[in-house]
Length: 229
Image (cartoon, rainbow, N blue to C red; front, side):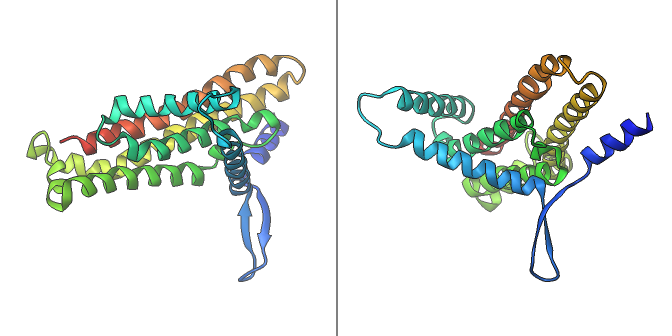
């Protein structure tokens, strides 16, 4: 049991990929390095997928149109005709990053989203998007009045949501990805042969995609509430 605890603690530890030789050494965590690689891969994939678009689409262009159409329809249905074009690119990019990040465990890489710093950063970005849009589209006075809806007595609770919403997004994503990672590591230690493959279909694939969908859906839902007239 002690050996299992030690091995699991080592897996859960925040690993440093390398150090930047400035100011006495700036450590770069493995989660940041994997994130950079994912961003680079998604960028190359997007360029390849959308290169040489034609009126008569081929298979590559059909895949691109299917992905973009799915994201656009989701945003249009949630945010409405007035705002969906503005936010669809960001929400789609975050969704793709989370899917690839959560599935990175399949290739033997620790998912960046099991690092609390990564999920906290994503949650802060969502909070800035939500409340930035609220004040951008309603103005300073209208943005402040949104905190008093539907009745003024709820204003303190609505103000508290500025911190509660990103916290819930952060901990929900982090907790589920971390729990799935721990379970898979325990299964690999106990039965390292065939059984982990079956569980990986759920914890690495289904649960990873599900958590990405939940994060994007909640962000879009909160955003729709902030934009509502």
